[in-house]
Amino acid sequence: MADFRNVLIATDLDGTFFGIRTRLVERNLQAVERFKALGGHFTAATGRIRQNIIRSIPYHNDLFNAPLITANGAYIWDGKADRAVNKTAMDPVLVRDAVRYIHELHPNVGVRVSTENGFLADVNHIPPALRSDIERMASIESVLLPVDEWETDGAQWFKLVARGDAADLAAIRPLVEARFGDALEYSTSSPAYYELQAKGCTKASAMRFVADRLAAELGHPMLTVAVGDHENDLPMLRAADLSGSPENALDAVKAATRFHLCHCDDGAIADLIEKLAVHLGVKM
Image (cartoon, rainbow, N blue to C red):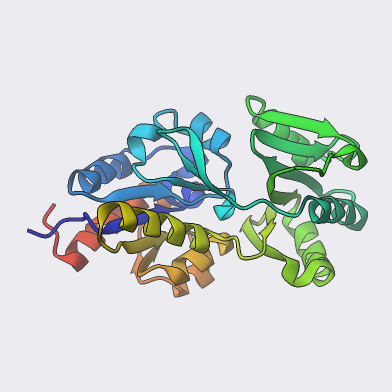
């Protein structure tokens, strides 16, 4: 009988797995349990860092049964063992230069950098939107120091997030990308978040790492299924064997995916699993 033992689903969280206001959708949770009961492997591929996942999904170890892809692929974390299984840090000197340059470009755009344990930000440049983020994530360690005091020797920084209004981010983006060129990866995870990682580090590269790791453990290749809603999901969606997008996804994302799903607030991942079962001939 057909099952899901060779299937890995990698889902974005915000706007995809989560409903509105980070709501955990019961229909998704039930469908994921049925998927795993039939041998399936389920993980998240998110821009969030691991501490943010722990805060939003306290029972993450029960929900996800494959290593978690965090920081847009820069930090792959085994939640059950509570350890990183792969890390792709940015060049810290380059990060500090990018932070300074973004600050010069626009006074209303703030920057936070994802570290092993939380966030790093320039205490002398915290516009309102960034301050709101820091206050909202008060349970996550935030180190606030002048950027000139950031110690680069041995630093492991995984993602740079420029935070501001959509129009301000759109204005600085071409200037940032002209300045740093092929040295970095660039994407948005929402109109208010412009994100940079090390070159070659994307959700796609991380999904492949997790799939290869599972294939080596299980002794058979994995079918990769990706689902997401925004620009930072596109590399993963294009690299996956099968892909899906919720009704609320960007048009460019919908154009890149095979399965068109319901709105995230209605259970897009449950919709995906049901469609996948039909496609693969798995009886649920």
